[in-house]
Image (cartoon, rainbow, N blue to C red; front, top):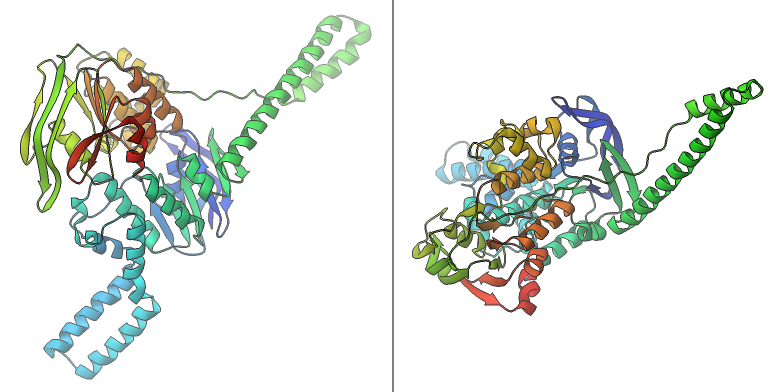
Length: 528
């Protein structure tokens, strides 16, 4: 089970959680929802033991814990298979000891009878740990997550960012721990893999707490929803759709009750004001004043703050903005792009779609001149001012800097008052601009990265999965801003909202090629 009891956590002067209590029983599956920066990831860190509360207790009971963070955290020099074996440290230790004993037996090094007896003991221990079926379990999870048969022997560092997150997810799932924490597990998954994961978690016997903005996913997996607002949790029973229905009814009832109370207060205050000076009514007036003083005022529901920003192109480019000519690229033996050519004109909005690892990010990085292609050339218009937003842009932020310091570093000497105006559009107001990057949630870091990116003068946006880690409102606002942007966009995305709502041209990157797809095939290409 997972639990928090009277738990409080602050970062400096910023209170994130206050007197928080909840529990999730054995075998229950719950979603944890709420605005970015509300403390969802902090709760997961507290439950995992990675972070300690200032007051109260939090943690897990009844078995092992698996934890998927928003960062992959892999050893790039490990093979995929070796990385997943790290989920079984006890079995791996026995396996290594067996290899050592077998080598000694083969070399005749030591007492043979003792070595054979030790080997038999280790075999029994390994079998008791179900060690002989571990690679079969690993294979089943990797297959479900879309890996190819030869992928287990590849180094983790050879995989794209999206596939590295799949490795981290596989590592959390494969041991099937009794308690499982998942922080944004669907961010880098296509539709097929999301379906497999939802089916896997539906049948999962352990306790699961999932942080995600994917309501459709929670509809399939969750039977409870924890709604984190204003440092407190409200519990709803049922899936995400049931939660939305119940919450809407609760907020409606709260508003109606607050309105009824306001009308009653007005009525009583009118009576008090009318008869205050009459001696014959003094007792009644005092009685009503005392009654009003004891009443707890009900509050109307408050609309949550939303990001509010626009994207403005700086200057006008030539008609022909970008030419990609016969570009190819390979990572050693892994060929990802072959003879790719593109012609992008002013104000076009080009979106690359395709499976994770197909080369979308590689092509975008080559276009952004973040890396040189193995062959071919990229030619930019003279007046083009491209800006590149990496899908892991938030990970490049300095955790020791404050929010405003991070943005100031790319602002070209703009005054802090202007920077604070921009940050306010991304919900960093007042003293929150002085929060260290290291204490921000994944969604907050994404907003800082977006603010930092957009404050720079550009007329071409190069975007790699820009909606990852964003809550629904920020995602919607970004898609609206991209739709109305007057400059040129080249974007790699799985997001159907970008493909259908923003793109003027869609290219499917697959099998080394980049081919334009018809509008009616756009969504199919995204979901492939």
